[in-house]
Image (cartoon, rainbow, N blue to C red; front, side, top):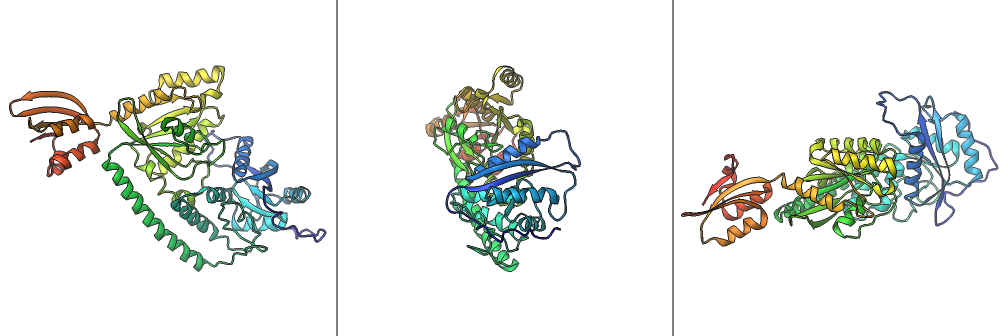
Length: 458
């Protein structure tokens, strides 16, 4: 490794004051990639996404570039020619931070900071900073800190202060100057253990809330998709809510839920979730599993896609990989919502609309204009109704309340007046059926599943 540069001896302060921080974004276009399946973003698209991530925490990007890396250097990733060029550029542009859009080992990060004479963070560190700045709930804050400490545990080195003064950020990687972090693994492990205990309590609380919702009971429909696909805009359109919806990566981090009525009158709970992204840090996926439990337990998933993005197919693959890791690999329990068709023209728009006509599991909408959003609600209505189960019961003539309950919570398909009561056959969700048995026929819950038709007599 080259010796540290000898300059004027002037040491740049880690920060120049409040406001946007000047930064350079580099995307390492690594040529040695095994197992390429042909679906790969272009370096330009990857660089654009990295710049979007940096803008999400108000960094001022003064230069962005994709660098071809034929053979990654174990100690620095880039060759010394590249390092020297950006060292001079960083000094000339008074840059305070260099973002490398890819994973860096602790050694690579430390060596690059020494050679570039600037703070360096990788893609994982950048995403963690965004989440730290955006998490609003107690649960979100705990999850971000847990993920960041797990990431930091292998990077216990003296380093420049970087984003800890970013408003709302957590600033887990410190340095000389303002807040030197000198934690050893024992202290970090103690903090991680404490965070996990607190998160376990949060999970229990969320589980109780989820059980309460099940008693309401309404089906849960979860919006998922690549970050900035328009989930929150669609959520606002369908629920008439005012969730933050901006043309910005990770505008939504904490889950939001609202109840809405479908065209049939049936109600559902719609859940807006954090956006997925390629190369999402493993620690972050694990830490946010509690948040994503709404996706795991959802009755139906709406996969919102950005139809106007040239990488929409690759983004779809990234989202499906996350869903599979969460235990929801079956595409049969989801609807693909091709969003942003208002941004398509001519043949592109016609192709998306044609695909939606051919495939019952695909619908093309515009969350901004509202185009086809009513049709989406009808499709959700049909899919939720298809999950209904039959229940056949004989109700005493004088028990009008029980009959009214069945009409409110299910679809009565058959009604017969008999001498010994009113026989009805009802199609209803499994949870409504279970609730009926608990309310009106205790003791039948355990045995009713043995009867294929769900027949119960009173």
